[in-house]
Structure formats: C-alpha cells, structure tokens
Length: 199
Image (cartoon, rainbow, N blue to C red; front, top):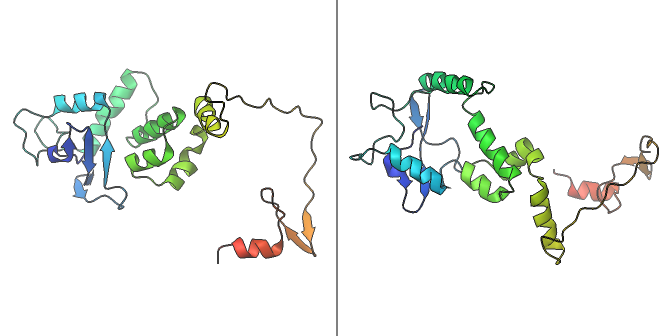
C-alpha cells in the first residue's frame, strides 16, 4: 500500500518496492530481499496507468482513499471482506492475496527463483509453504524434457507400480552396532553422516 508514483516505471513494466506500510506506519521493507524490482504484466501496467492521476507528483501514493490519503489497512479490509462476500468466496485476510498469487504461479509452472525475486520471499520459504503447488503435470513434463532429449511432447511419466500386498515396517539398519539412516543411493555410515552433519 506504500507504492508511490516514483516507484513505478510503467514504460519498462516495473515497480520498485522501497517502502512498506502497515497500520498507518511506513518503514523500509523488513528484509533486504523485500526491497526489490517487480516485473508487471501488461494488464497490471494498464490498471496502474488508470489509477495514476493526470497531475500526479512523484511522491503521491498510487493507492489512495477518497480523501487523497494513503489507504488505511483496517478500512480497506472491510471493503475487501464485502467484495469477497459479494462474489461468494470464503473470507480471507489481505495476506491471502499473496498466497493465492504464489500458489497459482507455481501451479502454472513459474520458475521458483524468478518468483522468489518477484515476491521477496526466499526459495526455501517458498518451497516450505507452497511446495505442493510446484509439481504441475505440464511443469513436470517440461523439466523431464530437459533430461530426455526427445523433447517436451515426448516426455512421458512412468506408470504407477502395482502394489503387491502391504509392505511391513522398514527394518532398522545397524552398522557396527550403531543405528543409521539410509539416505539416497549411497550407503549411509556413521562416519559419512558425521562429516555431512552441520556442526
């Protein structure tokens, strides 16, 4: 909500996030990664062009209330809830708009590193919170085509293996009297685990 006219470069389709505004207080973003350049879609650019007043000054806010002041989060939330009721969806917090954007982007196969730059959220956090949305069939097929030189169209998924009975619990692996975990394809030994474990 702290976007000012000077933060926009609509000709190049970008927006610079330099400030954060919450409950009337404005400050720099919480993290260095949160201060970022966001790429805008042509539709975003057109909508923002319509919002900027003809004689807007660089320091003017883009999103203002009817009095020309920055939008107050609490007042806007009431309008946001009314809009959700009007279209018949479950009431969500304002932050849910970011969740929806990220999960939709990942489902459509948007590159995780690029999305991290756009949102100011680390790759690890995106994976932790939205990882289940990363594996869309089309995105998986595209990634598999990078491995199989047959190309995108020929990428096929292996058929599921038939289940033969119910597997019992795994037997623990004991090496030289020590209980060890098996990881990946390499044999796991206490020595290897010690070398790889964080101090």
